Image 1 (cartoon, rainbow, N blue to C red):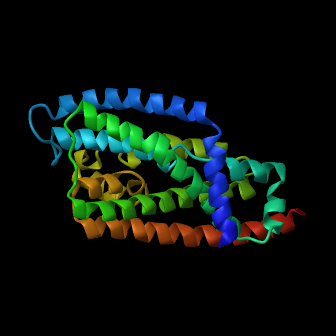
Image 2: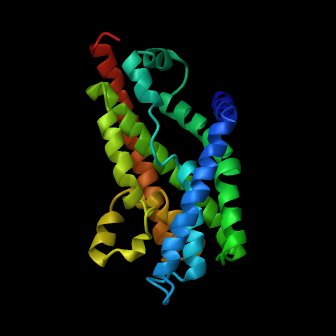
Length: 258
């Protein structure tokens, strides 16, 4: 456990060194947050839509802008790059479980993004617009939901990167994920705006667990336990799938002579 804690700290330190990139990303988040706020305020100007009024829409937009970096919605190709170069063999020889080690580092990265990419946009949105805050009793469940969102996100990214063991170049798979994830996870518009049949299909996938679920918990939109159960089930399923895929991938490396 000490090794994984050190990896989490190393992940925090690694991303804290790229301060200019982080602040550039923060500025981009703020600009797009203002644009999305203007569009969605126009949508609900005549009255609430699917349970979203003005304060709820504002909270939805700025929470989404902050969580987007926290869950690293646009993917992570570090493992894929190491597979292509063959450096992953060194990682597999080290005395750790590769999946757990990468997750520990990702926790450190996420911890840094909370300070730079999550709290500032949310605070700015709350200062500029009417903002819906939840009751104090909701905050612990929101924290649980956010942590589950990180686990689901890592599980997806790990499986996408693991396809490199078979495809050798999985940039097409990652690009497809990045293009579709924004719409399917509730970043573009709230999933409550979709027709009933579309919502049913989307909630059968892990994507709503990334953004829409934590926002729903924050806004108390929909059944709390159903939302958390959806996140937990996908977190467990993706973690277990990642473990078995990694075992098969190690055999693949041995077969290839790695």
